Every structure is written in structure tokens, then in C-alpha cells.
Image 1 (tube, rainbow, N blue to C red):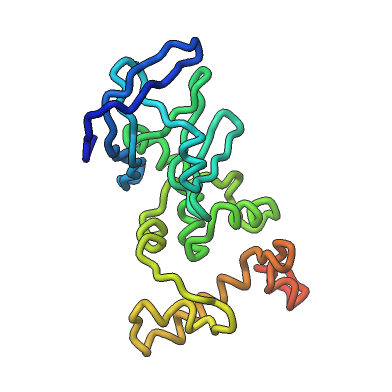
Image 2: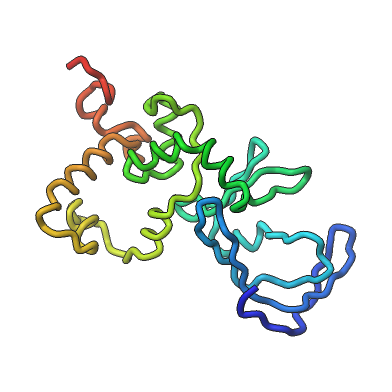
Length: 218
């Protein structure tokens, strides 16, 4: 625990109404399966607890979304999956770095499609998977993507209203002019083959051409 502070921070009451003293507060770093670190700030240190608990209400207050189902759960911030875990007994546990080998093997196909699609969000990939657009992929569950995490941490907020694709995506990244045409063409190609919210998650390329993406008959 980092930045630890001792003090009188009150008590925590368990399900049986047993009170437990909070000895201090600090920051905790959790290592995720792909080696990234998720930092939790203001964590209460309760010596009497036998397990390290993360309260759903605290995550909700910090702007995280949580999804539970099929004996698993995941923590989401925007379009990014921050952490995921599985149910053990009555508790939902976070998958840590010790499970990384099994997780990487199970999710390699989804990770590969995530990269192929220009780091599309998990929700977007689920829409494509449900329509049979991702050959060989039955479920969409992948680990944290280092490029997505670092990209979203460092990006600058800009207004998209009335701006071209070039201005939105390339103006702030310092890409040499010689690569802009290829970068814009690639971005447009991927965007037009992913689900579009204004089109009720239909694929823009199919709506425009009237043909399924990947169809060899013209």
C-alpha cells in the first residue's frame, strides 16, 4: 500500500453487524493479467478482514460500470474493460497476473480480432460476432489491451463537431504527412465495417452498398 496514512477513519460493519476499525488509508496497485497496473486510491486498511474487498458502490462513485453474468464480472470505464474476474462461491474475484497464462490462451482469438479491427471496443465486437462477421470467434472476451489503456490515458480532449476524420484522429499525434493518406484510408475502412450507433448498429458499408461485408459476389 502506497501513500499510507494512519488515523481515526471510523468503522466498517460486516453483514452480521460486527464493527471493524479502519486503521488507515492508502493507495493500492493491482496487477492485471497483461502486466498493466490498476490503481485504487483511498483504500481503507482494516486489519481484522481476512479478504481484500472492493465495494461496488465505491467503483460506481468513481464512474466505473460493472457487468455481472455467467459466473463472471467485469469493470468498465467508458469503452475500456479495466478488469475482469470470475465467481468463486458467493464472491466475485478479480483475475490477477497468476491467471494470465490460462487467460491468454482462452482469449487469443478475441485479442487478434480486437487488433485487426483497429482496437474496436468489446461492445462493438459483440455486435459483429452476433451477426457472424468474425469467423472462428464464438464469444468476445479479451484481456486488457495495453495500447488502448495508454492511448486513452494520454489523449487530449477535442471537439468532434464539424471536424474531418483527419483532424479528429491525426492532428494531435504528430504523424508525418507522408503517412496521412494511408492512416485516414485505414481508419475509414475500419469505421465503415464496424457497427454504427446512428444506424442502429448496422454496418455502414453494407447500408451503402447493399452487400454483406466480405461478400465475393458483386
